[in-house]
Image (cartoon, rainbow, N blue to C red; front, side, top):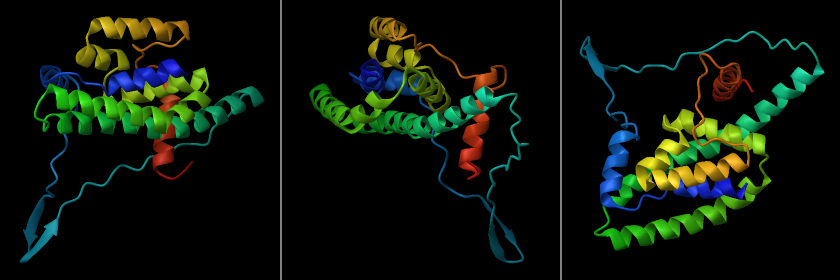
Length: 204
């Protein structure tokens, strides 16, 4: 799974001010405002807070033990990969914002090199233990969390040559950096989305 480690490093490696600005504008979602709306009722200030919807799913019905084992593995893999995908999404935003505060390209490159060393130190043991199927799920969840495929992110920040190179490497491992995430039309993605929601609601 070392190709996946390199891919994640590339996702977080932005090498110029122009690419940072372009990448933010093209790919990174805007952060929601931190203020909380309120209204006055009877002289009191009442905060208006939107609650997340609560989803209720019927129990899973399996045709056979094979389907049941597949679902159990998928739950396990989503629980493993979702935190990593959210780390990628959060780090992309935080890194782009921090690099904008540095004075020049030399300082930005120094920070990125250190960040890559830290990434390898922190996540290589986990990624090396992942199976190829888990790696594919991780790529899908990165699409979900970043709203862009790994290929698109690499192309925006490092250029299409790098994106095509790492797409070729991924293909050798039967993976695809251009993978999409479509829970509306794709049955596997729909099941993954159900698992994510149930995990977030404490049901799994």
